[in-house]
Structures are given as C-alpha cells and as structure tokens.
Length: 578
Image (tube, rainbow, N blue to C red):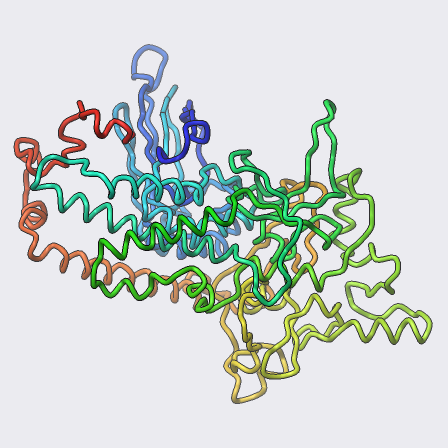
C-alpha cells in the first residue's frame, strides 16, 4: 500500500473496543488482505471488573469454500454480508478444521487471506487495534476471487487493488534500475526477489489493461470523457474502486443541497452483469488515464523483464500488447460492454427523482419503462394487443430452453452451435454461469450441446449428464445498499437457487457439494505441502529453519535477516522505501 501516492493511502487504523456480549460476525478480510489484530489493553480480574480477552474462531484459507457452503446450506447465512455469529454448537458440527485462540493483552493475531473467522469478546473491557497488509499473493487473490464476491454483495472496496498494482510496478521498476544494496551476498537474492514479484505484478497488470481494451471490430469510440486519475471514483452500484474506464449516464444526475453533482457511474463488470441506471443504454465512456501512457508503461515493463530474464521460457508469455490482446482467449470486458450498449434498448424516463419504492417496482417489472414497445409480463405471456403489434413483439422475443418463457431477445444467451437460447437467470442459478462469463466466451456453447443440461426434458435423455451446482446461493437483495437509481435487468440476484439443488434431508452435512469442496481443499493442501518440501530441499538455510527446535537462536545469526530489516537506520539511498 505504500506504493500509492500519499493522498491515496489509508490514514487510519481500526480500533475495536468490546466487552462481554459483543462480537464480530464471521467474515473474511477485505480484498483478501493479510489481517493483523493486537490487543493493546484489557480489564483485569480486580475489584468489580472481570478479566478481558477475546476468543477467535479461525478457519483455513484452503477450506474457505467448504466454510462458505456450510454456512449457506446448513446455517442459512452468507459469510460475505458479515451479519451472522455462529454458536459454539455450530462450530462443533462443522465439517472442517476450526482453530480456537484466546487473545490477551499483547497477543498479535495474524489472519490469513480469505480465511473466515469470528471473534467473541469476554470480560469487562477489551481494546484491540487492527490493520491490513497487501502482498503479491493477496493481490492475486483479490483480482481473481475477492473483488468479484464484494461486487455481488455491494461491499466497499477499501483498498485500491488495481491502483496498488500499477504504482507498485512503477516503484519496483525503479528498484530494478538502481543498486540499492551494498552487500554483495544479498545483491542477487534481493534482486531476484524483486524480479519475481515484478513479473507477477506485470501479469496482473496485463490482465487489467487487456480487460479494458476496446474491440477493433467496432468503430473507434469517440468523445470519451477524460477525468484525471485521483478523484476516487467508485461504482454507483457495487461501490468498487474504478481504475480507468467506466460508463456514466448524463441524464441520471442528482444535485445535492449545495449544488454538487452526483453522477451515476457504473463499472464495466456491473454493466455486463445487467446492472445500470434505468436508462439501460445510451451511457457514455469515461477514462482516467491516457491510453498511450498505459501502453508505454506496459512496453517499458515488458522489455525490462525480458532483459533481466534473458533466455527464460517466460518470455513467450510476454507479448506486445496488440499480440496479447489478439491471443486473449475471451472477449475483454470493455468489448462486452460495447456489445451490450448496442443491443440493449434505451429508455427516456426521468429517473433523477426516483425513490426506493420506485426502484422496487422497476426491479419487479424490468420492461415497463418502454412505452413504445408492447410489454411482455414477467411470466412472459403476450399481452392481448392488436395482431400487428403482437406479431412485432413476438419477433423481438425468444423462448428460453429451460424456463420456456418468452424473454426479450437481448436478455438471452444464444448458442454458437445450435439454435437454442438460455436466459441469464437460468444460467446463473442452474449452471453457476455469470452473465459476463457467457458474454466473454467468443464461441459459447449451451449446456445441451455440452451434454450437461438439467431441464426436465434433457434429464430423460441418456446422452445428457445433468449439471451439479457448485454451491448454494441464497441470493443478495442489494436494493438497500445500491444507489436508488439502479436496476437489475438481466438477472434478479436476490433469488436463490434452492429449487435446483438436490439434498439428502437426513444428512445435509454430507451433501455432494460439501464432499466435493472438501476433496478440493485436501488436494490443494497436499499439493502445497509437496511443493514446500521440494523447495526446502537444497536450501541449507531454510532446511535448518525447518529442523530447528529453538528458533530464538536465529536472532544471534544476523545472516538470516534481510538487510532492510537488519538495520533500521537505513541509508539515504533507500529512504523512499516505506
């Protein structure tokens, strides 16, 4: 986080003051960061006070999916919303490892990234200070898993993960160009460490910049508004931090008491999954960086890695940006938004004075806002209109293969190998496919062509093997937290997938989903343990650490200590490292 400019860094720490009866509901650390929690003060068993301490219920990072499924399917709560405190009996029956720690004054608790945990305070008084730290591993987890889950429940992104990646690359590139260390024994090791992390960060940056590239198959986007980065722009729906490109509506502007504009800005991921203001389409592009600067930095960092790696095999994946985009296996999210802007209809309703009640009615009836188009009810039975208008409406709709309702054509996903179409609601609840996942696929095949369709008709077919859902979805009603100008037009994410699940009512804890996730967690553990053992072989220093019983003797041998940590009075040459 220290790579960010000073005005973008977090300037505060969290202080938790508790007593008997207070608790922190089960949750995961924001943006998959590494959590730190130290108890600085607590009441003592003296006078009228009771000794203060905190009981931690910890789980493993590798078992996070098992924990999530257990809370969803058995306890009926989602750990992503941080509103449930599990009882002790629930932890006793849990099909995963639970680590219980009592924290007292001076105890520092380290919370692994994405490890679900909850805290129960005891005694008259407890005071704890908490902070978070990002590493290359946590940034990878954030981009590939944590941020998408935060987006689903509209949880604030407190750390600017994409900006951290960009500014850390700038910082590490300067490190690689300078000789920061004077001790030759550490020179190569430290440089290799920087180079390894620099390359991993570059791959994350490559994912970010490719995802924001426009399609060459469409006309060049004109009149793209430019807002210099640093204005802390967030998505009006999911409240995530926006690094560069996003969409804004010029009509849905709310003015505050002092005349300040509150524009409706939507991130590309939310728009792809069907979230937007009620205008649906006709949104304008905005970017915060000059694209030329992002491209130049990409090429600069790419050539630096190639020059340092020499003849390494990793050079093959370090392609110039145009080639990397052409070889990208799926459409960029910006290209998906370009497509959806062209096929989604545009409404012309004044939405700036919408109330939460109006928002609710819009959610229940997505299509009522098109006054000039015959409305198709949610049950998708054609309204009794004139023959000509009814025929034109039918031509604009198509029947979903599973639910058999007639949806508007732009609300359906069409197979590239057959004539079938699936609505996005069925794809999400029955096949665990997000709308953007389907849209990004250049040649998407429907579940029937993949022989996994689970509709009633296909279940009778011997060639079909019905899809088994990965987990339970209770649904997330985001109307209370999202901007009141917002609507969901493709999928109602507040609806659960319970009707698609097949459970054993006599033993729900041994469901197929929990067994599958437990096997996956055990496989991940065994692979990481095997990799760690292989890494320790041949490293004399690390091997001694593994076999050493008394770790306190390490403090006497300064050769094991990184020079950055060994000498706190660093020279002026590394004064910029914070």
